[in-house]
Length: 375
Image (tube, rainbow, N blue to C red):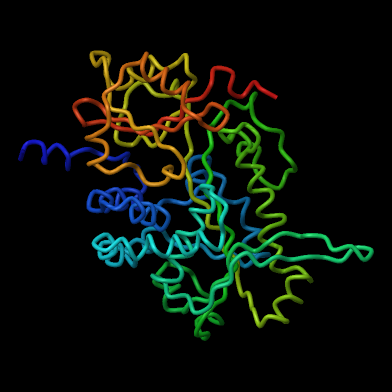
């Protein structure tokens, strides 16, 4: 029994060279509750903007938007440091989180990964960061020739204590430091993208952001990271500065001082780019006919690996050590069979896998052989 327990606690999680990711992975080895693990991932995982900017060295393009929108950025590492005691305590009594999520779900009944992600962010703001006021999904409209048109909705407006924002690593001007609180318009997104060659990239919508961002395609093949950022920076974030928003704010005693893009997720690189599996690996994608490459990547001598099919909304934090120890060992034929049978996003399925020796692990997105070639 002692040997089995040692095996349970020794399964690695995908480790990134990013410091916040390393600290998050360390914390996740201590948390059992599924929802608390997801909450920790939402709070402390590296945001997609920072991850891609570092990978592609494209930090400069956001400068004009940051000035125009008064954008603030939260530091994942500091957010984790602030939330860590709360998360460990919450893991002992996860019913509090589960009850809150059930309450939010009754108000927002759409069953989608993005909505679950929003519920977790809302809980973090309300119960851990102690936001003074919270407004969610503020709908904005415009009258055009007497006809009411929907402009969109602001995901969340939250008023946070300036000292709390400082603890989260938000750089503050002298003027802000004199304030007691700051009201922030949060735009939220949880996105998962597969990186493709330039020849398969989506068409850029304009020249306001790098073309390389359109090389990240969603599992459904319809959206791209570039397209999502285009809408966020040109429509959703500026919406709280619009005439209609200011009029609505005045009527409802709402104020917005700054904006924050809170986008988390995972970027998958093609399996052909890797010759070995290592702890710096985060996520890979492959087509069904390439499944044998996956087993070669783990170890040519292994005929099976442990694989856990992650159905939505279980796309956020990796499965716990206990879950992975109970996962079935699988060979390439059985993996292909299960991937083809599973109800994924246009045939795409997300898996968390680790070697039989429990020394290597990774996320894998499996897609149909004709993925990216369908209209």
